[in-house]
Length: 429
Ligand SMILES: Cc1cc2nc3c(=O)[nH]c(=O)nc-3n(C[C@H](O)[C@H](O)[C@H](O)COP(=O)(O)OP(=O)(O)OC[C@H]3O[C@@H](n4cnc5c(N)ncnc54)[C@H](O)[C@@H]3O)c2cc1C
Ligand code: SF4
Ligand code: SF4
Image (tube, rainbow, N blue to C red; front, side, top):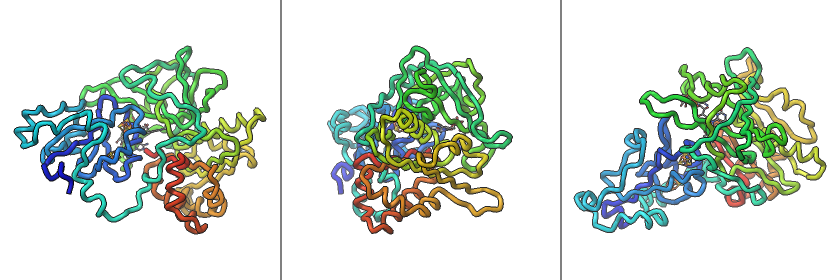
């Protein structure tokens, strides 16, 4: 057993709620599911975190790199962390000593560089291996990705954008509504790449009088703007009218954004994300697997490839899209998708609630297209992107694993290469 744990001390891993932008990257990255969140904060479970550091570099704000020397018995519970508005200070040497912790155990610099493992590490090796889709997600971009700028406008200093477009991009007249919003930054430099997200700060305060935190939205336009040559980006925002349990609720930011009028101004933070980026080398293939608003980054990548193809100066590889929604009416951009040439993109649509039809999910379509996916899995120029509902992630990665296995590929080797080479990206929320 680890000496530090035996001595009753841990370096507790904590997230700074004042800087965290609630982007979900850490939760998606953590290989042991030590990170969770509620509507207020992202938090780390002390009894599960093993100090592996996998979440540190992907975090776009640095808010995750906080460590506190704590007596194990006084480790902050997740319930406590959910209520925090700021990080608690280090315990003083006197407080530590009173708790039976020897002086000198709390060197923060040392902690950040190499945290003392928590009690979870002692049992980690003995644990049964379980399938954890997040462990295959890359934290590095593809080798040919362009350089992404992040955090140009951090949560404490947002910039202002003007709404120049807002329309429902799902079929009108249905309860479920998703809007295509175009924001213009005027003369303020706001460089974004396909696959990055930005934060919108809704006006007003929450139930306890605290300023609302920013909500993240994936950029749906390519790097040269929704309208080429203009300093603008587009977003795909679903109006939240019920919570994850199906109970009625009015989502603070999504409703604010969907109700914006042309000419309104909004507070924006970001950009964020430096790994869910597209490859830029010729003949690189892109496989996009998404549900609902997870289509936003896929739209951005597809549109960039379409513009490149139109220019005649770039020879892209295959584009393959697996897109799921409950019904065709709920699928954002259904119309524009239909007009893309078949030799440009291979589109596969799955609807799970079409009356009179069997339920079909993106994983079902992936299995149907196993032969094509297997060929792509064998090709080191293939890049896979998964975005949308959290619940889709495991099924999709399992489908990829099964496709690989059925094709006689060793999944451990393939999965490890996809992660290492920045070729499998997971962004679910
Ligand atoms: C990296 C990242 C990228 C994202 N990209 C997009 C995007 O491109 N488009 C987009 O629309 N959203 C996107 N989201 C989700 C978005 O950030 C917000 O969470 C969402 O708009 C809800 O915010 P809200 O303020 O309206 O709801 P809140 O007021 O925060 O929540 C209200 C209630 O609804 C629940 N809830 C929150 N979101 C949903 C949901 N989607 N479905 C059902 N219940 C929900 C909450 O748990 C809460 O109970 C992304 C999230 C992340 C982390
Ligand atoms: S350090 Fe490792 S185990 Fe701990 S929260 Fe980060 S990714 Fe998870
Ligand atoms: S990765 Fe995102 S959610 Fe996690 S700590 Fe960093 S900013 Fe917060």
